[in-house]
Image (cartoon, rainbow, N blue to C red; front, side, top):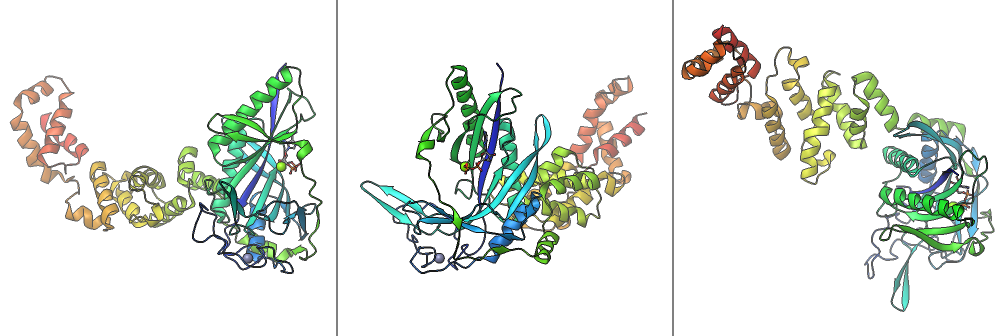
Length: 488
Ligand code: ADP
Ligand code: MG
Ligand code: ZN
């Protein structure tokens, strides 16, 4: 019997607000939290420390960010949604409950387009709800410490429909979502820090069956590579279980990257009853129509739309458009460059940016936005090198242009100045080149004779000699034309 896999993902994204969701404490991204970290429990107050009688006040920015996520994934945003208490005991949860959302989440019924090797497909988004993060326990030998700096940091949980069919699709979905929250500027996307993390629900069923199989849930996987491996392992494991005649048990599992296996964390019997009920200390969240349309109007362009625009308006190939939208900063850099060029030679600009510029920036361990290279530099380089702009022949050879770029990267100096200072302009004017060509013809009589007797390949050698003679400044195609003329 053939089996097929079904995957549904729950993604937690930490919202990049300055303060926490229900108090004015700083929502510092939860870093390291090692023992003795000097700022442990510094960003806390009676509200996020769960002291009796302290009351939550909702952070408006967090609501806005959740709405932005919903709009970007084509969800319906509720005019009125409700916070709920999710009750459980854990030392990093000082109130004994987490404020989350239950039956009336802020966003519902969205979708996300994913691209895989088998094409483009739509994955349904069930819901996006808001909640607070818990603190962090640090376990030591014989005792544990609790750090509440992260308690009350705003999260959104994005829940997908059980519609993905492979680990590849799951990773494509996650990457698409990751890219969106980063482009929206609502989450820093840092997976190592756990600011974007995922639970994967996996089941298998006979191929074509209309009913879902029993699922397991793999908790808190925080890299794309591990997610892919964990899901692949789990699919294989479940198929084996079913083939052996046994049943898959509904349970929570964890992934061990060192051994590349998933293992039982807790079974369904140990699952909690969260006793959800509406949060009495907070009124329902209101998102009136005028606020919603204001947020919609100011929604930044999304990466998928951007790629479409770059392909349509500038004739970039899909791979080129994808390379340019690898980050928001890179895309903005490209947009500005093409603007400076008046929309001309966009392809050449894209090639410079994703090629030489990124190479220089990456090698130096820098970010494009904080490096010395500016869109002005690239526009100037393109002006000097792209044939469609300079009309006939590039004014600077590609080697010369690379040299100028490296110099600009190091010093920030304007391209025109560098080209002047280093004498990088190609000599295209025939008059200035004639003497060089004549010298070469006189200096290499054997090769000249060979060429004249029909060995046309020798021309390349002679062009090379002219280049050498001119110190690399000769425009090779002009030199070639001139040689041909003189030798015929
Ligand atoms: P919880 O895990 O908190 O109980 P839900 O019942 O909402 O929450 O389900 C969470 C996720 O599990 C969703 O992403 C959903 O698509 C996925 N899911 C549900 N049933 C299955 C299944 N049989 N196989 C794979 N994924 C599933
Ligand atoms: Mg779950
Ligand atoms: Zn606080």
